[in-house]
Amino acid sequence: MTYIIYIALVFMALGLMLAFIRFIKGPSAGDRTVALDTLTTIGTAALVFLGFLFQRFIYIDVALVYGVLGFIGVIVIARYLEGAL
Amino acid sequence: MIYFVLIAFLLLLMIAAAIYSISQKDLLYATLATGIISLVLSILFYLLQAPDVALTEAAIGVALTTIIFLITIRNTVRFENDEDNFKSEVK
Amino acid sequence: MSIMEIIGSIFIIIGSIFLFLGGLGIYRMPDIYNRLQAGTKATTLGAMSLILGVGFLEPSWMLKALIIIIFIAFSNPISSHALARANYKRKHFPVILSDDKENMDAYREVIEQEDKEVKS
Image 1 (spheres, rainbow over the protein chains, first blue to last red):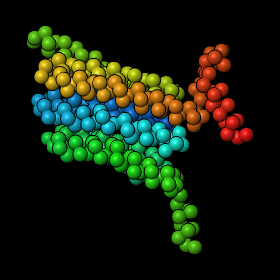
Image 2 (image 1 turned 120 degrees about the horizontal axis):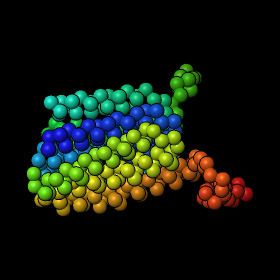
Image 3 (image 1 turned 60 degrees about the horizontal axis):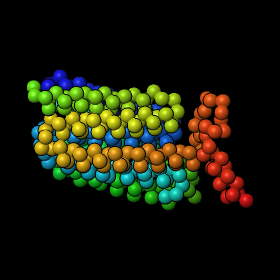
Image 4 (image 1 turned 30 degrees about the horizontal axis):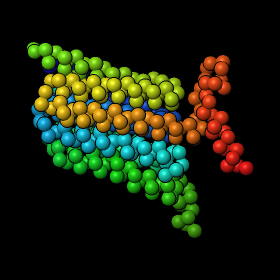
């Protein structure tokens, strides 16, 4: 069980790091917004997994709020890029 | 041990995003970097056993800050230009 | 280990591998639409699988895990679609390698028609 926790944490950290490198490098605004969307989804999954590691039921609520509100910022940025905000 | 490594990794990520945000001339990219800072800061509060602060940070930082900054950018200018600001101040 | 722990561990490993593949696709893909594809679909599957694995490991958390899965399944395609439409309207057209260019990219005609109507 310990190795499974280590493997999952390392994979999620690598995914966060690669998406962040794309955020730094990305040539246009669309690439950076896609990287932000990916980072938000990986962050939601990481919050649920860390709540399982701490064995606290109340910690899941943070991930619930992130899942509900996380896409509003991306949609507003997309509307701004489209020119219709 | 693994928690210290995780906290160090997240801190490095957050500091890199903050440096990118303050050194960027395009204000839209700086706003996007602010969203990443908020996400990583929320995970850090979570790791430091403060779920209520993490809840507030997630609710305010990911939605409200981005929307207010984008409305501001829409009403003013997107690109920061040092020379124009300097000239307007001199005149 | 009981049978539930084994199932949950398999789901968690699959989910974390797909989250990593989403990040790798964001980093490696050449075009913005390819990045959108890799970064949204793979990440959606990874997050849903990992949260379901946590729900199997702690059976009393299953209801809230299912609620989070439903929210992810609604919100990720919405943001993906909004981003793809915004990028297309900013005239970042996709690179087409096929010979049949007109049928592969039918939405471009609609955009160009709208541009003509706005100009005239």
